[in-house]
Every structure is written in C-alpha cells, then in structure tokens.
Length: 212
Image 1 (cartoon, rainbow, N blue to C red):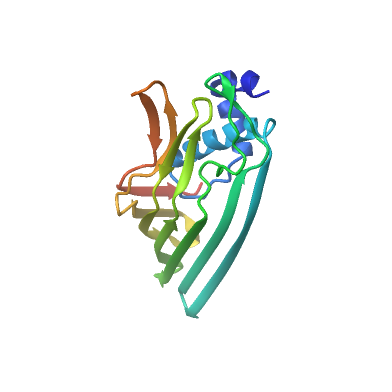
Image 2 (image 1 turned 135 degrees about the horizontal axis):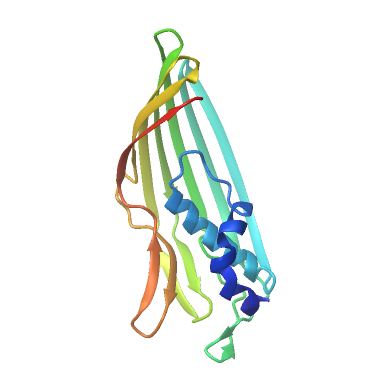
C-alpha cells in the first residue's frame, strides 16, 4: 500500500489534506500545508505500521478581570512506532520504538487576550501567544535517515480593531518573533544532498476584512 500510494501524493494532496488538519483561524497557509503533507504521508504509512501513543493534555483559562483572558495548554506525549519493518537500503529496518515524526514529548502554549470596547459597539483586541516545544524527530523512512528538530519557542502578537456590528476589521500582527528556524520535513537525496522545508521566519503584516 505504501509503495502504491506515495507516487500519487502530489496529485491527491489538494483534495485529501483538509481531512487531516484542523486549521486555526490565523494560522499561516505555508505552515498548514507543511503539516498537512506530513499528516497525509503518515496516514498512508498507517496501513503498513502500528503506533503506540500515550499522552495527556491539560487546559486552563483564567479571567482575572473584565476584558482580560489568560489561557494555557500543556501536552505530554510519547508517540512511537510499534511493529514496523520498512525496506531500507535493500534490507528491512526495525523501527519499533522509534519516535513518530513531528511528535514532541511536551508542548506548552500560553496566551493572553485583552479586549477594549470603543465607540458605539466597536472593540480593540490585543493578542499575545507563545508556544514552547520540546525537540522532535523527523525520519526519512525510505532512506533510513534520521533528523532532529531542537526544542524551540515561537511567539506572536496581534492588535485588531473591529467596527460596530463587525462590519469590518483591520489589524497588524507579528509572528515567530524569535525568528526561530523550525524544520517541518527533510528528505535525503544522496550522500551530501537533500531537501528540507521550514516554517515561516519572523513575519510582520496587516490584515483586514469586510462583512458583506
């Protein structure tokens, strides 16, 4: 199944990807695409391998005062291959116990939102969020090459004005303020060659919308 499906990933990616990834409203499209490609590949390999996943997720929301909201999410995960012996370099490698791709053992997400009503029904919203991720594995199964993304922290800020009755909004934002290099996929094409994909670098921008 794996050999038959992989050559057609490029053709089915646009139709199949939305099934696997739930997109956050403000998540960058390039980050979503990288995640979806990885999840599609993992869905294909699911027919040929078993996985063992143990984990827990804790969430909390705090409203210490009017218009102020703090939230926190902590995830602990132990995700690894179970019975999996893919063909690598002419032989069968034993991947039992090898960590699954892009599955850090711990992730902490912290957020703060302040909303200030203005005028006759408008509001200004300030958002701050940071994500602290442990290191994780990236494995090129076909070539038997193992990569590792070090632990990292990524933060973002946004300030948005929304008009009365949500008639329109305009805002500014900054993402990956630390300008961290985060690897999302890697493939070895030879002894000294290969390809890699990364999440967006530090980005600043303006967004706007109108309700029709």
